[in-house]
Length: 323
Image: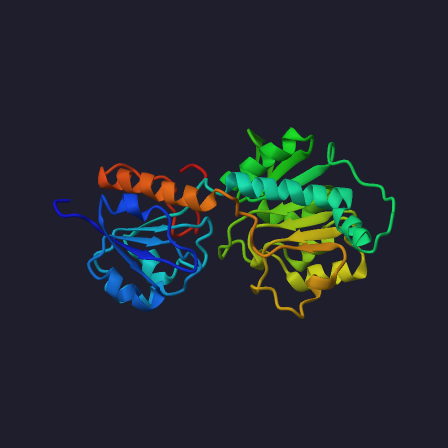
């Protein structure tokens, strides 16, 4: 490229990190959603720092010169509208940045449920010295639904503390390095009853929406805990709420919901066996700096014409594990 490339950056509520270094390599146009079409005109690259924005479809008419789009998030379900999917624009995501924070969140969720930290905190608020018996996680069984890089890091961390982990993904297989056995996701209702913890880390795609159906929820054993750090629409929330309200499921730790923010009147807020967190499983004290450094690394590769990591298969809706 003989001229300096042009990078449009869609910022949100958080200031964009690392643009000083990027500006030495390219002309940078920082914009909010209302000005995205003007920033896209003639731009080679779009950097979606505001990864939850829905502004791109309306501005797409101005993206005629766009060649690469990078989104500072792992999930791309809100991004892949038909015109983008049909285009030649390469899409990359923040592949790998959130693996460790999310694995640690899941471990914390499992410990929270096993040791009864929720009821213990409630007792502390009332100054009640109330002894209770926790559960060992060593020797327990966990099914990780979603066998990408986040699921694999989670499996390794859980195995390190003695949890027996298996996976569920698109296709069944044996002898997987991280999961041992991987079940076909379509067989969830037949297999979830064998596990103490069912952990959802799958991306939201047409194939995974509603994956944890009412039949799957019904198949969870009464002592099981559901952990959802994937997407809310993976789960039949009504079926889950019904089991939790009936007291026929031990509990749930939920970070994602079908509607976000979770409405104040939603019954999940008040269920004592549920921990609600505000879609923050991927956050850590280093994540913004890590995202900025990743984009700079990718930009250097792109300028050199070298392959980019974390390329999203736009038909599948995620980065294939072989990428």
